[in-house]
Length: 470
Ligand code: MLT
Ligand code: ZN
Image (cartoon, rainbow, N blue to C red; front, side):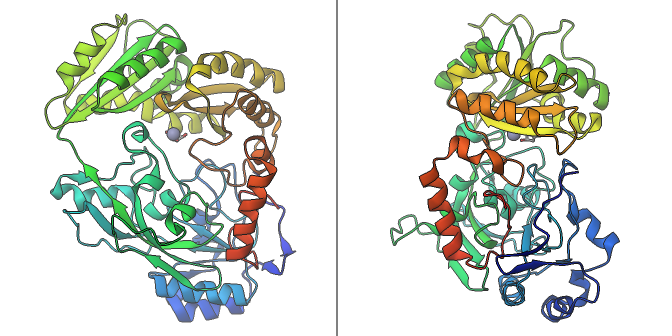
């Protein structure tokens, strides 16, 4: 397991273990003793990330239920010089939401507000600890949903999704999480609260703090309440799964369908090795009698049935094996081949998850070169690829290397940067990619980001080591 090296003292912020902790008593006075977890068994689920690659022991876990409680908690922690790791649903994949060793974990999961749905503005105010599935359940009676959707919808919290600027499967239609944020309430490291939840369509009064906090990975503030934009939840949905001869064909077809079908919701890809893992671990039959090197999954959604329009567009495509589905159960069956990749890979071992973006025109060349780059860096390693093809976002999952053996990460991320891509498309930098931030951000960019961090969190309380390294 990868453990952070920032134990002990750093920039006046301390990390300790929980035994005889007087801070625990002061935090219990704020949130109640039941919401300060010092016992190792109770802390355990907060200490290891979803991949199992990143882990560290927490000094304690504190679970405030409101902005006021979070403010008081952060005031105490900063005054005590205690480092804090904010955590939502702990579905992150880059080690940004788990302790490196000795920090206080501030869990937002008790922030469960579900405000009335503003059906005119199509917005809603929610607590940071509400999950994506809970939000969608809450707004569904109004024919609405969040524009971002992802496989971890039952566990991922909205605060975490904003903090990491999550992407998911509908980015091509609705954008990433930052685009869904109409306002935030957040607590700075010293306990001050910044709040902009008015939902005014036009509000040009200075810096866009919500936009800044989206994607800041818990390094600038702890978001406690969010005003989120909603999109129509279209009743009619059609899915097509197609076998493709190569990546170039999948890229071209996804681009062509996107250009001619405004109702396109998703264009996803996966490859034969990933499909084999999914079928084996999930007990699914292969989708087609014949095996293809590449698969393309398309989804369209609209008020009226988009299936005829989707079929009409695909009629011009040379893809003999195409499966269509419109009924929820059949659609879920096709989506399972794509969405169950994460769990199937995890059943094979602890993966290095390299979430990258490439210019669309470079995707075929990248796919051809990345396999070689992986085996050259580590002949025992195996790469499983899948991702969001219309956005040029591929998930390079590498099985084989030990969690802290970074040779393959180095090779893949340098290849990506050399081809004009980004080392993180949607998962963030976390602690996993700090060493390579300079590959896709300039020295001036990094200095500007560090200046913002120093201005908002001068004592370095929040998520030390994330984005910039130690
Ligand atoms: C996905 O696209 O399924 C997520 O980003 C999760 C993953 O990469 O494993
Ligand atoms: Zn993804």
